[in-house]
Image (cartoon, rainbow, N blue to C red):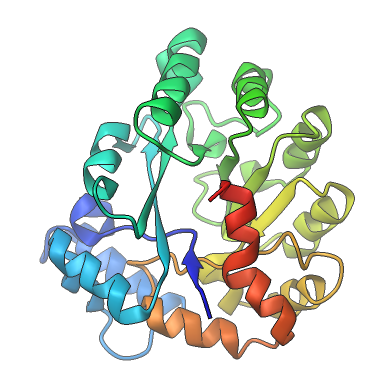
Length: 281
């Protein structure tokens, strides 16, 4: 079966991903692996401390494509040019860029989106409102021009959600609903699936067909049954696979998704068909 991983980054990209063995961040990456159910070596991600090692991990897992996601927040910046360096020349790698209109300014952020798409060949743009300074909700009007331009370009928006949001109040899925209603042709991917607010984000995706859930490593936490039940019914075309590597092994995550209870026809959509459509591959 063709498998596309919607959230996959090499360890060498940043200390946050375990780039420096022995550092506090490295130990945090090991801790998070244990927390989300990694079996075996919790430092398995050291295999991707080089580009060659990262590509070997992707090939060994049997991925057709791996999506490398950028980030632009006041606390961590993974520049678009750096993401391009990683994915350039590798057909199996897909780049997702990032902007922050608060940091960059509206015009500069829009220009960066246009450059990321037309020059760097990126297939989406990531925004992380809850990690801003101050934190914001996805329906904050500062993001409206960004959403409008992405909708015009038919480029998907990816939102970072989940329990790592410094203030959990900014993991409220209601802002996603407001943005989805305001921009009905904007395809929205919700990383981490707004876990642990599972029922709420499922309700948002029920109402808005342009909202796509990517729970990645949080599929394996309490709430899995609700995600799977929704995907097996009305969310079959709005649910996608992500390993969240290096915080979970790719191959193990594939096997665990396959065993989670998705119907066979739905699993094919989760693993590839929905990603092909969302990313315009």
